[in-house]
Length: 214
Image (cartoon, rainbow, N blue to C red; front, top):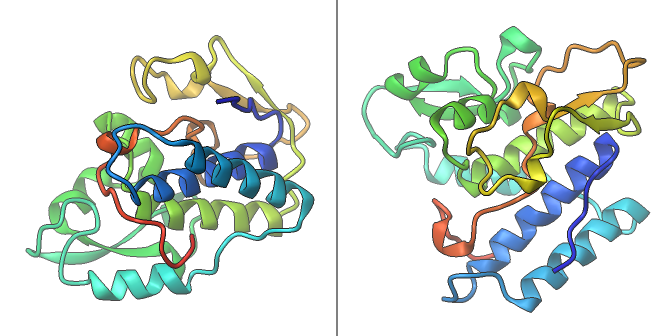
């Protein structure tokens, strides 16, 4: 199916969010790869977001799922030594708010340290669980909207992540995308690691159905 190569922050974030919706719909069937209906969902949401006829979901579904799963680490599932972790570290500008806080075991929290969720996943060469990525993308989109960053242009550096055989294979995340020089910003999240390619349904960590929206 046709793909999109984002050129601005809002195209990057909306394309990733639309692919997230595709991944959720992929959980409805037992096929190892995405089906035509999944691509239709992705494209409809992406162009709806660009036109303003559709909106990203609220954090209510994320908070409900966090409460329902609060007896285990959101990263590994361990019920031992649970703490709270910031998806976007406070050290980098992440808010100390319920939306940015998740339940994590001491081991994962210590391993992640001050890394952004996507930086940590790239270090581990793992694609993030869909539910965590959904919360993360909402945080990033909200931040960019509030700070007027959605129209900033992005450009490829040294290589194009869309041509990599897998998302984090041989990925030097500092050399994928950069912001226009006029921005002069220190991004609190890994803008260059926003995923535009998703694993096939059979390879997703949490293959869950698209039920209540994203």
